[in-house]
Image (tube, rainbow, N blue to C red; front, side, top):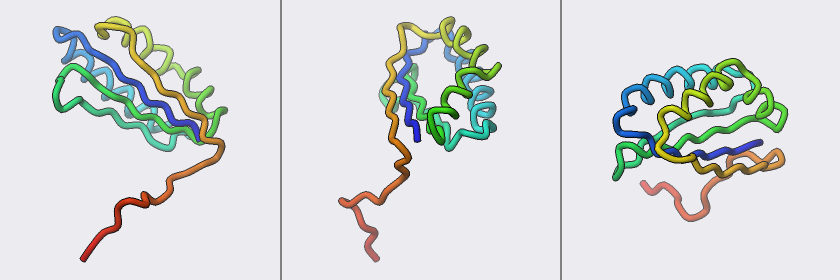
Length: 108
């Protein structure tokens, strides 16, 4: 499994354009056969900072994602709306999946 977390600072004057673009991109990425999940979040303290969390089944699915037409269109679009170069955290989890969190158990 591949886990990718991107953090992007969006130019305030481009925020509406960003929101439209990321909505379309989210729908397209979620339709990819190798996509496990794709979500984006706005920072609660900075309305122009966003985090995208992407999970792909394996390296091949991640490579296929980057080669899609929608990714090849989104990357140049993203360059027009970001205030600075986005940060990325890329993790190859070698087949690992979700596991239960040890520190929290529901109580009745």
